[in-house]
Image 1 (cartoon, rainbow, N blue to C red):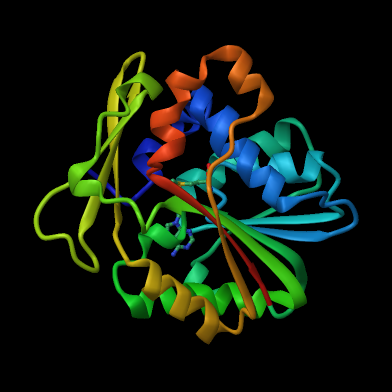
Image 2: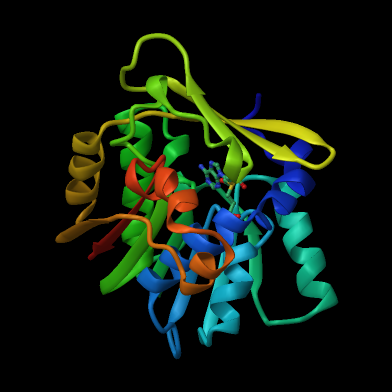
Amino acid sequence: MTTNYDPIAEQYKRSKQMPWRTFVECYTLMELAGNPSSLSVLDIACGEGFYTRMIRQRGAARVTGVDLSQGMITLAQQQEDAHQQGIAYIVGDARELPVQEEYDLAIAAYLLNYARTREELQSMCDGIARALKPGGRFVTVNSSPAFHFPASPSFRQFGFETKAVGDWQEGTPITWTFHLEDGPFDIENYYLSVATHENAFRQAGFSEVRWHPPQLSPEGLQDQTDDFWSPLLENSPIAFIECVK
Ligand SMILES: C[S@@+](CC[C@H](N)C(=O)[O-])C[C@H]1O[C@@H](n2cnc3c(N)ncnc32)[C@H](O)[C@@H]1O
């Protein structure tokens, strides 16, 4: 299990091709991001640049990707070098973002669930809020703070499983196992409650906080039936949040 993405950067990149990612995760996050035309966008915990490239393709004027993992940033930069989109990638920690009120939109897919304590979550939210212009928006997807991971059903039909062992309390580790054709790999993140998230957003200076359920794209419904998708949509292990500074 790891929170260090250097050794699993390539596997993680392949896991982004899973249909649930495309039809639910990506669809919902991009719906929340809206039309980024003429906006400056910061993708925090950008990984190998999956959403960074997408937001630029969708018309963002200026895009920066930042991630803690050198391995992830190397993969992102290689793709930028091969097909130049004018994206700037930097290695950096979300808790110490070196930017001030420069961005209209910040996105972060699976960053906040790396905070193990309310203090760590607060530093992430403070850094994100500082990076945004007044009125700027932050949209994010994470392991859902409202989902009870110790009693998780199987999500094997989607290509992953989740579990949490031990007492269910602030900081309890959550394991996600992704099943790829050449075998599984695990990542670990951490539980912090809905209330802890709400407090961190407000203290960071976000005036509006909205929680959104996952949505299924029309293509997802063509690909599989309602019954197939309902376990992921009705009691979802992922949650989407939108905050306005
Ligand atoms: C599950 S990956 C998601 C990558 C990308 N957002 C995506 O959806 O494809 C989580 C990423 O968070 C990064 N990360 C974890 N803690 C971080 C921090 N404090 N600052 C910046 N990046 C961080 C990891 O290096 C990893 O690349």
